Length: 185
Ligand SMILES: Cc1cc2nc3c(=O)[nH]c(=O)nc-3n(C[C@H](O)[C@H](O)[C@H](O)COP(=O)(O)O)c2cc1C
Image 1: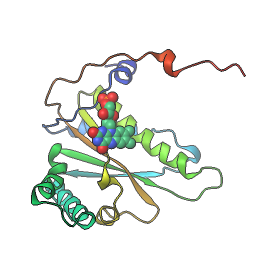
Image 2 (image 1 turned 90 degrees about the horizontal axis):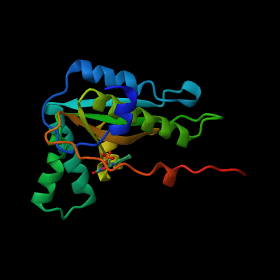
Image 3 (image 1 turned 45 degrees about the vertical axis):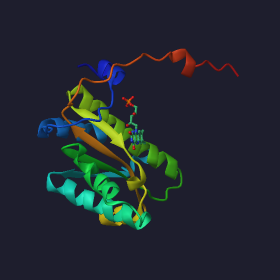
């Protein structure tokens, strides 16, 4: 698939099953590191979670969820715990924010978002399914501590990866003129 086709046809896949090859992953990681980055700060890092690590992440999610919602039912808790099992591999995107005289925090966060998007497009170009997820577990202090985040770090998202289990959703093309308009002053 060429670059334009990959960019214009990328779609998220929520049902992910089979494993992702190391070569495909390596291509995705290299794509992430080509994200635009004001000041060349490299304001990001990534955790790779697979196999048994997903169960440990599920236990961490359950602990965090329970501390926020002490009256959680066992069923709801089991659902939270099982969330990381929705894909064989998860990449946690983390923004590492530093004080910089000309690169404010928002630019460092945007750079991290671009890195995740680069990974998604690289995944799609190689036939790998991907889904960017956040939710409460992306903004929780217990989860942050469990994943080893420092005070200046924030979770940008969990990128779930795997082989697509169902046919990809078909896309309705959007009208570019609705979103891109000329400005003449
Ligand atoms: C920062 C961010 C966080 C997201 N978090 C979630 C999420 O927690 N759950 C979810 O179902 N979709 C989430 N999404 C959206 C999906 O990943 C997906 O992009 C959306 O459903 C549109 O589908 P498409 O990517 O195929 O166009 C998030 C997207 C972004 C950019």
